[in-house]
Length: 176
Image (tube, rainbow, N blue to C red):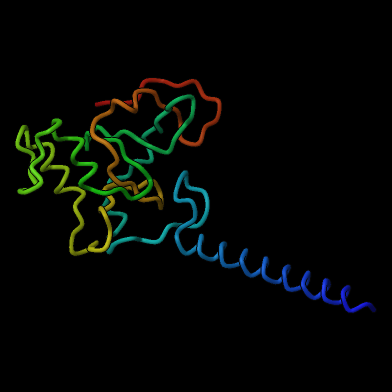
């Protein structure tokens, strides 16, 4: 056989082996990180904190927000007064949405105007000793999926559909 052809076959074989190894690494990393984390598809996400999921409110009965013609995995929970997401978000960013524009004091880390909703949000979402290395603690669950605070109020979640439904006719979300 010609030396050039042998080199091409060796290169092609090594290339295929490298692709297989990369695919295995990507799949194993995705499984370790809990898959997509949305919609209940894929592996069960790992418990990000030392929190018993059964101690959290079950939001499986809530419909999902319908936005811009798409059914999302966001849910509005009137008990928290906020939209919840099936992925972790920074607690302070979420809680700032409860503080009227310009009234957050970064020095004291307080909301100077109408602080009660902001303070309640901080107490619910701020990382604790059971969850020190996360940007927020989960506050609810749907089956094995943790839900985190995402945004104050229901403004961005006025229409809903059953979670996972495609081509549904949206209806008003439950707001109380």
